[in-house]
Length: 411
Ligand SMILES: [Zn+2]
Image 1 (tube, rainbow, N blue to C red):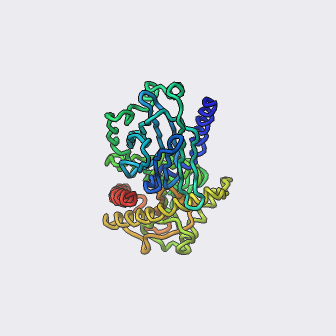
Image 2: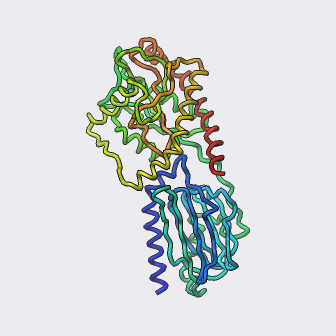
Image 3: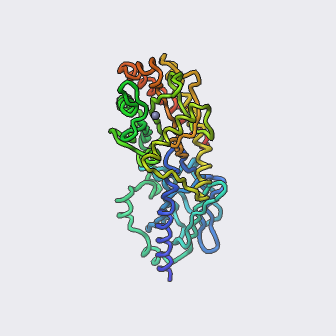
């Protein structure tokens, strides 16, 4: 009977891992799940042990028991513990060790004072706040039964290392932090050339610029860089966001050099996602970019699932101010490099490509091909180099500020 319980529990764990896969995309970048220590508890119960881990948002987790001595291992991908210990009550609770593994998993190892096996395991999501609760209930069993069900420690360590499994096994030094990944998104491409002036196509121009910016960023060594396209191909707006997610991007820069019908706009402007356009030009540009998608037959229907919507709203609260700070840093960088700015350099619009709620995204109009002086600059390799250095400077400044703000928020 106990064996079938264990099988059921194991299946539940697998199901959770699958069910949480969507949420993990949310927690990937920027808004990493945090332990809410004051709502978390490890407590002895009449028949065993209760472990409740309150998280700021859902995250995939895996559960193992190891024998000799009996231990419970809870790995969560990914969570910031923020504390060195979770509150315990009752005398039956053994020592615990918390740490972060180099591959992004966070680990809790609990020394069990008796052979306890997981009886129930669940992750509950609060539909209102988007927060989550991993609820584990362990029941007392015989040592023989426990050892039969425990995973081989040799196998476990071969797969995940020995971190925290023994009291003397120190937490692994948190590996050199992963470099943030910048997703560069050269606008348009393929059947959609973007703006065209004097035989110059926006799609070619921004691709050329993206390659230069990539090179500058890689040479400086602080970022990893990925691109939504590195060729003259059509990529849907939705596909650009998916590519950014697939690359584990921490931020997305969509690069453009559009033309405006009135031809008056000039200089660099950074657009943020807004509920409505800040002016007619923003409305025109957003509509124009969406139209290319519709021409290519892309379905823009959004996900209306209620929980997804709530999770998105929660994530957006984190992301919106980070995106604004990014836009302001970029504009400051361009201004400090002495490059021409638009008279209103930060604006907003309903740009589909900026709709990822879990990573700061901005759309940069490097200049406007409809303005002859801008066009001249946009064709100048020296200007490209200066602009790429200016944006790289700005990204470094923003990254440092953003890190500081994020770690303050976690405290
Ligand atoms: Zn464009």
